Amino acid sequence: MEQSNIKAFIRATLIILAAFTALLVLFCLAYRNASINDYNKILILLIAAISICMFLAVLMSVAIAYTYKRKKTDGIFLVLTKLGMLVLLPLVLLLEKANNNTKRNIQHFYIELNNILVDSDNKRYRAQDIMLLLPHCLQNNECNIKVTNDSKLCKHCGRCKIGALLEFAEQKNISIFIATGGTVARNIIKKIKPKLIISVACERDLMSGIADVRGIPVVGVVNKTPNGPCFNTDVDIDAIKKRVEQLSL
Image (cartoon, rainbow, N blue to C red; front, side):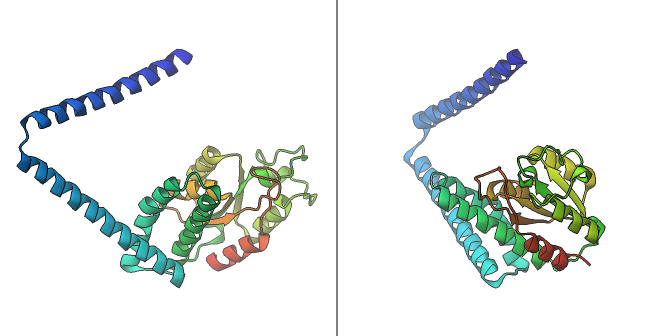
């Protein structure tokens, strides 16, 4: 296994070096043979490309601000808002990587914007088509029962909110799953194929999960972290109930 890993690393490194070598040769040939007119054409193309990118960024920013302010969207604003969530916000997040507070605010903004897009569809779903997806960190750390394997094992002791959410899901006839991580969550979604997902997680996991799930609307509910990330987290059950009531038939 270790041998195959190092081989994969060496192969990827050689490919990257080959690509840079090809570019270097290309630029050297261009430098040797190109005239001043060719340089001018390249500069004009670069200026045009940057101008188009800036124009699109402005359009996406306006659409995102408009959607967020109105709390709904449609038409061209919907398209530009989706494009902005796909391109602009991840780029902004990358630039703000060093500032944790700003980074978290942008992730929260992304989730709010995503929820607005789901609401803008004005769709209602049958209870059996709705999945409630929870993170395992909602479970009390001192509990010896692994509800991630089988949620029916939960004793509803009240030390965490898993029991109350299980009761609510049973009452509303919606499916509920507790995932130990993003990969498990994606496998559950692939297997169950719900029509709507109401997902509880931290800002980072929600943002990456929403971006990963294509074709299925995801409503994000940010969990609370009074004990730090991924440990004995909490969630506003009323916020989940409100979402289920709003989106179910």
